[in-house]
Amino acid sequence: MAATPGKNAALTFGATVTLLLNNVTVEHNNELIDITAFSDVGVQKMLSGITGWTASGSGPWDIGNTADVGESQTLTYTPIAGSTWSGTALLQSISLSSTVADANLATYNFVGNGALTPPS
Image (cartoon, rainbow, N blue to C red; front, side, top):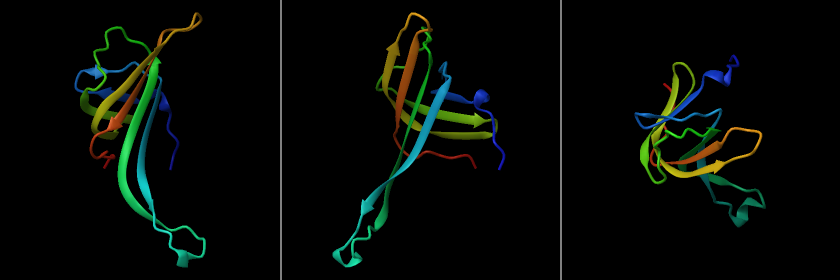
């Protein structure tokens, strides 16, 4: 497998909102269920539970961004051309921060609301 540069990645939320981001993380996870019994002699055993996913991104704050907390849209993440992950997500939070020496920064946190479809 070859490494790829992250400079061409994109994250979109809905049909019209492309966020100005320079840092994106998508986490696909599985809630594990502990099924360890006394007879397992202290060795933990796990069972696969429900899956879920989250996404977050940060970058320069775009004053024209219309994304609103609580909004549900299709979220797509494309780390490289031809490889897109997608699913419906809720915008959980937006954090804004400012420092004297940098541009205003926005951080967006999303929670998946259904399956995350990986590239096929």
